Length: 139
Image 1 (cartoon, rainbow, N blue to C red):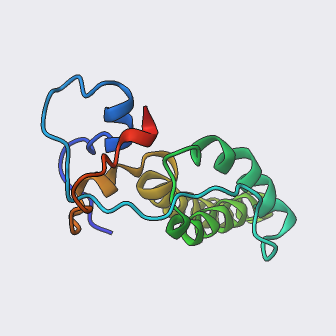
Image 2: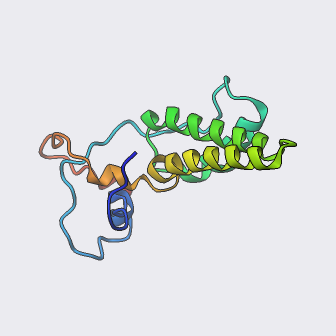
């Protein structure tokens, strides 16, 4: 995963909700995948992974997450739970090293898809059909 320089852009949905204070043009070619409307954890998650899902996903999914992000959210929950297991390993040095690797991987996913979907603001897709305001549902 290659990080881009500088802070990530604010998600377009948040810019619209705040009234586009920067007055910069909105990305009219940003993809708009199907929104994530369910927040129940997938059945294949373990008890620890489900706990992480329930603690995080319902709070970040409201209007900002898409269904295509669910698989990445599952990966992040799995990495967080695995990091927690490594953190409790008796060999402190090796367990800590592995836990930090898991947490770093999960943080990269949360950054891109879970906490701030800002990377989506940098993407380009075909513009929506003319005549319909794609941001009308947010106001």
